[in-house]
Image (cartoon, rainbow, N blue to C red; front, side, top):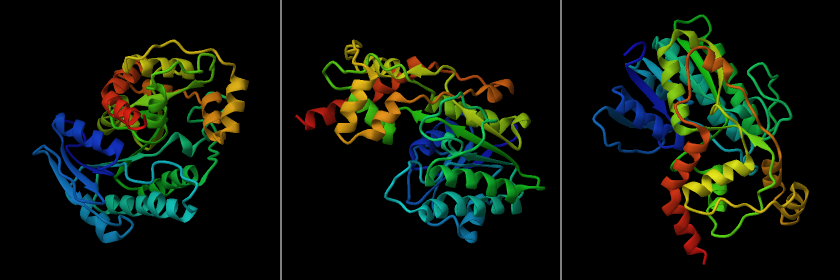
Length: 324
């Protein structure tokens, strides 16, 4: 099975963590699944562990005991304006530092940090983003993810523990929350939507493509001590993203071609300036560095979006019915 056989996954109750635990167990790994509250996984290969504060050394030392690798997916995963910067520092930075130190002491072979594209750029960017793009996070969330990368690398410098940073773009899949879940709810509405003229292009990554990348970097030495952007192969226009979601939900893919400027004005009048920026702005990345070492995303973006929407259709339709 290569470099890692027994793997600690933190954040195991979160969207990404749950999927990572399930897939790694299905593929024959022994998994220690750590979360803030007790969780039960239907697999003899998974050991569920409840842990309160990973920034405390004894908790981190307990978690890494006897594992070959760490996939650190715990953290505050969505930017929220109501949280102070100190909250992001405590959870995203301090816990990462302590876990990396514990991994070093325990001689863990591999440490994979689930970071974010927001460690490099904001919600939009005018140019194609690569790992060489200067890091310029625009909010407390992004700054904390960048700082987490730095403290992890510093804690493991000169040790036998090799690290990899993954910077996924917006992740989607069954059970997703946050901005992508909101977009799915909009896409599932049983009315024509005014998004046909949206030309902004966005890079996304399906949860299955992301997990494929996690498993790949766990097992290859060419991913050592390097950061990688993770994304589906193709960026899509916002109109095409919404069409793919509607296809998966069994809705008409016909979208009304309302001009960007008119739609943006309406959204801003409705107090949705942030949504307007996301719909009208580009965020395109190039994940060629990861592909150059041999990784290939197993899913296409359009098909994965449609499949995700199909899987979430009962929940979306249920929310829709509840509002009628």
